[in-house]
Length: 109
Image 1 (cartoon, rainbow, N blue to C red):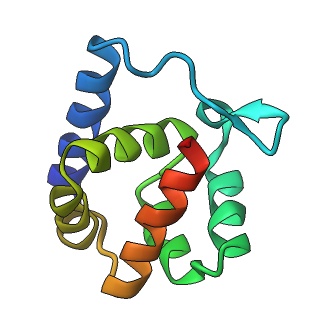
Image 2 (image 1 turned 135 degrees about the vertical axis):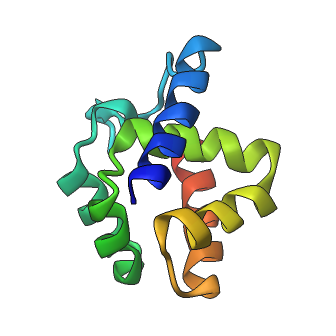
């Protein structure tokens, strides 16, 4: 778990150093995605019928900022993100992972 968290923090740090964390889109027209907390991400997943991902995402403290990092990862290498979700985050259902990537694209489109 500690190794996965260090890898996750590295990904976040790289995104920040590239200046890509700025200009996040608005979630529900109120707050930017970057401002979403862990519970808001959980609610967002549940609203999209992706409740099978909630536990793993909460365990790894995936917040709105992390969603932005994952979206940037998916735009560069979708297979890499899918692999990361399964191997590091611990998601168990490939179908849910694919649906998540689709919803992520919709969130940031």
